[in-house]
Length: 395
Image (cartoon, rainbow, N blue to C red; front, side, top):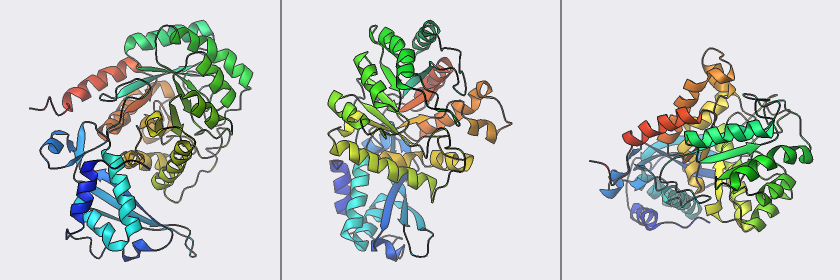
């Protein structure tokens, strides 16, 4: 379980005697099969925390004093989920939880603790500033730049350009996971990525390996990869032991189905909440296997088994995922939903939409963005940082 920081515990205790507008809200919340969620809203500068007006969001540049309280009852005999939502100050929400049941109150307290917990460095990278993960696809068929960097020399040249442009991490992948993509044999994937990973690792660059196969993970770690970025959330039965034994930080991503079929007909009861529940179960599985929370980052998997509406709903609820207690990576660069929301632009013409959605993710506290266009993203981040300074810079 995520430890509850003093700020969260004090808020919970003080809230037990608070009176508010939630008294009559959702009287069935204490029933069997009910889950509750906290989504911070109305984010304020982190200086609000220093002044005692709010609590910090994941130790970053924002604070919050209000949240959306979401209550969901699943697996009902009638079939459809029962969901109710309310916006209220944190004190009222915590008081409401104690009125419903001890279990509800304790879940809210754990989530508040996870939401306010400062995130330590991930793979040696200080998360006090948002980090940019540059994409190096050593593949013939990736959706945006397939074939451009299949040759190792071309991939290395591209990776070097991304590093010089300001990438904090190079994410090297040898298997396309675009919709409809076919699986790649592990030996082929290794032949593509290992020379690239080894080249940059020897030069001190933080490299992640983008793979869903345990064998490739192990080989990449041996070649110097510092992060495993798995679109399947360690679904390979051997993947979790590789990560746990090696001590390698991991990015757990949500994907509904397999790349070959994931976009055929994706369905969710509630996309944002279903993804949260899946990631929560994955994080718990990892920590139970000996992977500490500080070595886990979560990614809601934009575009992986999701319609445009699903993607939009998840992005609107970005702050929800901080309640998992881990750093949050958002990967949406050049994805098809951007063109679908606009004029059907091809992948290379989706820079503006990628920056817009990426900056909105930063406005909701995301700690990392996975991007194709590193130089443009570095410039956008620089302006964003000036507009959202840390507490000790606010005037």
